[in-house]
Length: 196
Image (cartoon, rainbow, N blue to C red; front, side, top):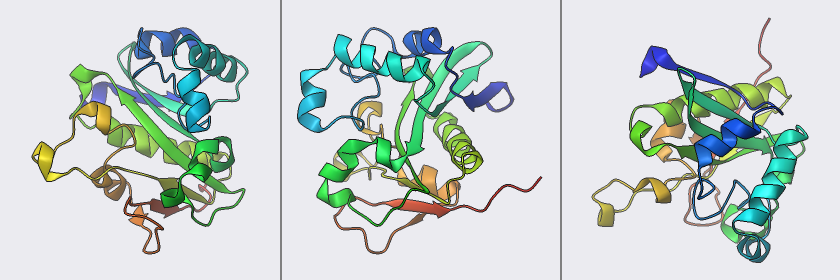
């Protein structure tokens, strides 16, 4: 896919693009990219149409940040990235409670159309997410990938890999935190301002 793939930041005018990409299921199980933005119980209660309305408000107001991938004019992928403070659910998970400040951004999820998975789209989205965070003044970016288990033969079905894989973060020069509070790895990349 390489040269045909284009990644750019989300725009407030992109709601129709998000709808087309996420489809009827809201990317996965009525999530509509709200799982990390709401505490778990609240997210469960609002699955489906309510999450869709909430995310639409965030997109159309310009509050939501992230990057979209396109193959030609077709949207094929999404990565949610933003200031860690907007992802309220991160603070409710003990395994993800780590040091952070107002200059810390988080990469919380990826959605890639099934027919485009395994083609490097996730890595390109991740690189675009890092660029977006840097452009907004982030000094570090954190990600919370899931580690494939032997039960799946070392590979994960797409629905279980929505926070990304360690290999993607390693390719984009993230490093695992040595003092992660739980078994789940936390990857971090320190950023310097872009020159020019």
